[in-house]
Structure formats: structure tokens, C-alpha cells
Length: 330
Image 1: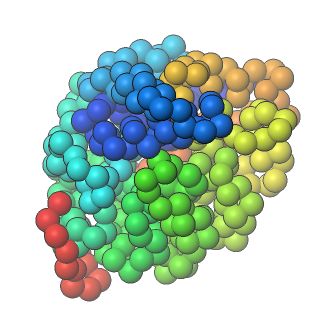
Image 2 (image 1 turned 90 degrees about the horizontal axis):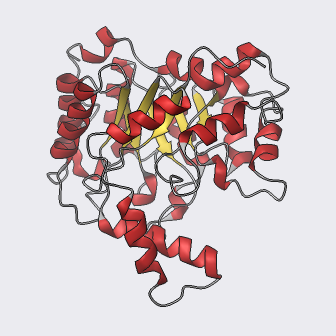
């Protein structure tokens, strides 16, 4: 198997504490402590939280770009979820948009951005998303259902209509997250109504190759506009290890729907980007039996097809929402 000519990380985050509320770090640290000690020990979550937060000071993505270069990753999709409706956040969505735009300007040609807006912000959230797409050329919508809503909630529909008009993909979180959020909204099946209603929008099931795999595979098989990524694969819960887990996934006949992603910096204390990429592409790795063209599609080609052309992403929309939106100001 030859190394693909281009690698694009389809699922990554800016390692910046300005984008992630402290309550989210606390929840993740509690998960880590419980995994490590079977039950949470007094003080362990706080210690782990402090260590974790130390990984989130790469505000301008200089460290991330160095890690990308070491791994041979040409471009990366940065995901900016909206937690501001459920967690107290020091920075506003406008601040987050400006930060991600500044990162793109600092590192030309290296980053795409999928920006998130909670549907409960209503009309003001819709206007904000349209504004950041117009102003910054962001290329997709990031949806985080565990914040407390279904991805097929009709309050999402105006955003999906906008994405259809601009040919913007939608990436939604599936599977577990910080324990302070609602896992019941993280099932891949919940996107079905929206995928049916918006056949012109491509939906990507984040972590779909790792969590809720059977449901994600079914959605990819039977909805032409549903894809999955393999982000989080180092944590795949498989008795035979993550490499065999992915080898099994790659034998299911949906490789044209699979997108490479790392979920950096979530696993930065365990593996760096170069180790993740080499683990996938080594001769004994999970891609060993795949054709070179299939490897190239998973590692870059499929996400490349889903991204909008610059002219489409930045043109004036000329459309309004499907129905009147109500909500708070983000």
C-alpha cells in the first residue's frame, strides 16, 4: 500500500481554552478518572482536568501545524461547537469565529472551519451563522446534539436550508461526551428525518466509525447523503484493539462513505498525529487490504468532495429561513 498523495484530517479542534468551557474539561476529566480508577477518587478529576487544560493553549494553532507537518497532513477541518447555551463561556460565538478566522489567516491554505450554532438561539443564531460564512468563508456547520436537542429538531431546519443553498456539509456529534451533557441525543438514527427532508445536504456522523457503529453503518448504507468519520479511533472499545476494529469497518462495503479524522487534541496525551497516521497506514495496519484508491478516498478524497467550492461558500445567499425563528441572543 502506497502512502496517499494527500491527507486531510476531517475532524479536529483548535486546542484553545477560549473555545472550550471549563465545565466541559471537568466532565472529560471525570470520565478519564473513572476509566483509570473504576470509580472517581477524590481530587483525581481535578488533577486530570488541570493536565488536560494544559493541552489547550495553542490559541493560534502553531503547535497544531507543526504536528500536521510531522504527520504529513496537508489540511485540517477545524470544528467549533457551540456550548454557549448550556455552559458559561468566557468568549462569545463572535469571538470564537474571529479566532478561527485569524488562525486561517495565520496559516493560509491549512484549515477549513465548520462552525456551530445551537438552534435554541433562534433567528439571531441563524443570522450569526450566515454572517460568519459570508465574512470568513467557513465551509460547514458543526452540530452538537448532546447539548440538549435532536439533530432533526425543526429548529435546525433553517440552518440546514442555508447549508443546502451554499452546499455546506453538516457534521454532528454522535456517541458519548462529557457526562454533564445528554447522551440520549447522540444516536446516529436521530439524523434520519433531517437527512430525508434535506437530500441536498451531506451529513457526517462524527465518531460514527467508533461509537454506535451498527447504526452509523446502516445510515450510511441507506441514506445517500449520510457519511461517517473515524475520529476517536484510538479509543475504540474493541477487545481486539482499534486496528482490528477499523479493519472490520473497512470490510463492510461503505468505504466510499468513510472520512479520516483524529479528534485532535483529545488524544494528544496518548498519541500524536504522526502516530495516528502511521498506525493507519503501516503495512500491518487496518488499511493493509484496501486498494490505493480507497485509501486515498478515506484519507482525503471523500471530505474533499463534500467541501464547497470557494465561490459557493462565499456568495450571498439570497434566501431566508423556512419559517419564523424565535430565540435568545447568542
